[in-house]
Length: 107
Image (cartoon, rainbow, N blue to C red):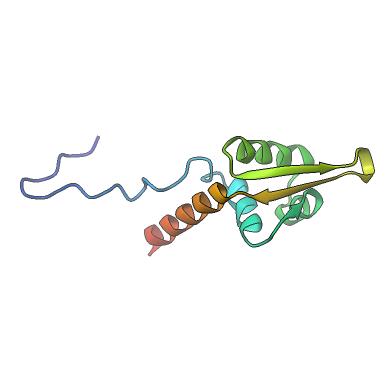
């Protein structure tokens, strides 16, 4: 619990308030960093770049998609199919706010 502000002093916004709980997970943050730097990214590139398993990447993508931070496009089926991810406007704003807050906290 935090102490109440001293008389004559207004409480300043909590420095952690702009950290996004969806993006505090390192894999999801790294996922979004890649998407923020590209127009779209495919599943196999992300899996290799992040060094995660197929199931782990799918789990992270589902969390980000549920938050509205990315869109998923699937073309084809099986071995010849491709899954592509693209950051949404909402996702970009959340990522940038989270990144900027981390920078401010780390000085």
